[in-house]
Length: 106
Image 1 (cartoon, rainbow, N blue to C red):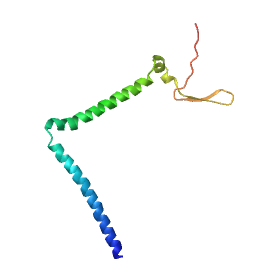
Image 2 (tube, helix red, strand yellow):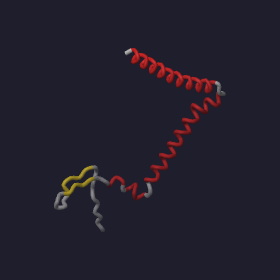
Image 3 (spheres, rainbow, N blue to C red):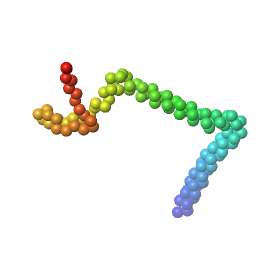
Image 4 (cartoon, one colour):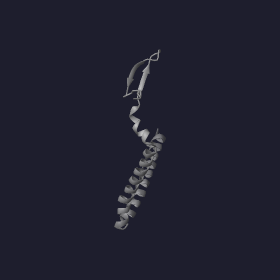
């Protein structure tokens, strides 16, 4: 029983030591940031997030622009839906704005 208590105690001490080292590392980083000139601090805390957001916006635009390949794709986008047919091939149910177009020549 006594050995078990000692092992738990030393495990607790090691865990706290690891946490303390991690905190000390962050404390050193923050101290080095505080010592930076004001311009570098602004670049670090404002410039980098703005640059990341700009890159995300550009990537999003490129991805969505690729899906808009032609004018016909844009015009026909809303003509999709689901049509359920029975075993005879007759429409039994349509939903999500499904419809068929039949062209009549005049």
